Image 1: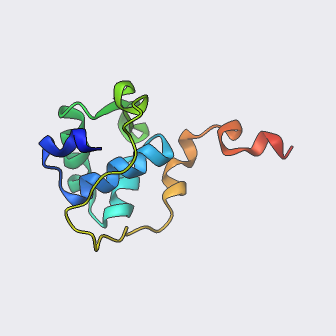
Image 2: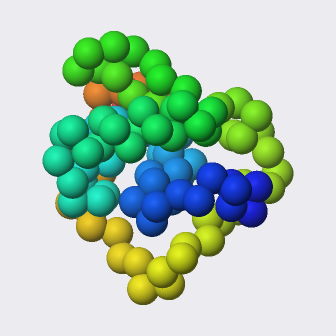
Length: 114
């Protein structure tokens, strides 16, 4: 995602963009888990990414989540986000738990099981 180099994103913001690209959405809790931060830090970072025009906010209150703006999601250039620190390791626990309420059974592949 060389097109984002002009934004000078922090590694935590880059991890968030990788996560939202892979999972299609990110919540405040997801950001906290992947980056080991608190609620206020996650809120501020997600708002910053939204204000930069990289994410779009959906829902409200405790059901707020963020998605990549359609122009980015549909871009063929979305491959990898280069890191300023190649030693990056995600600080994850259970990212799926934070997104589970926002993912339909068919998106989880559960409809094929039943």
